[in-house]
Length: 105
Image 1 (tube, rainbow, N blue to C red):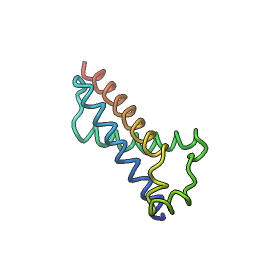
Image 2: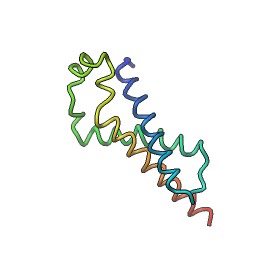
Image 3: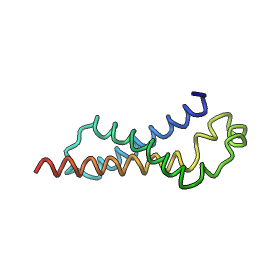
Image 4: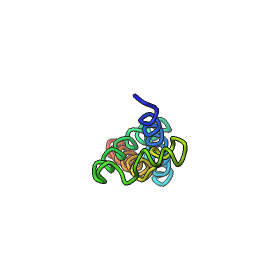
């Protein structure tokens, strides 16, 4: 695994955790602990970015040009990694919270 791929996965996981924490804070009634929100967000972030990347046809930025412009981070900081990661993390965390609430009742 090269450094560029690793940076993309790190950005996806971080954005997924941010999205998961945001949903967890918004859904006060969800019976989720911190670990649940973090893991759900991280997994959802990677999955959401992969789905968005396939819908966008691999992204909208030329990775070589972006890496040259920003010193290596450019290909990791693109729309699919940021929005897909945050959105996927939020969605998966919300699903986990809904399932946990349904089983609690």
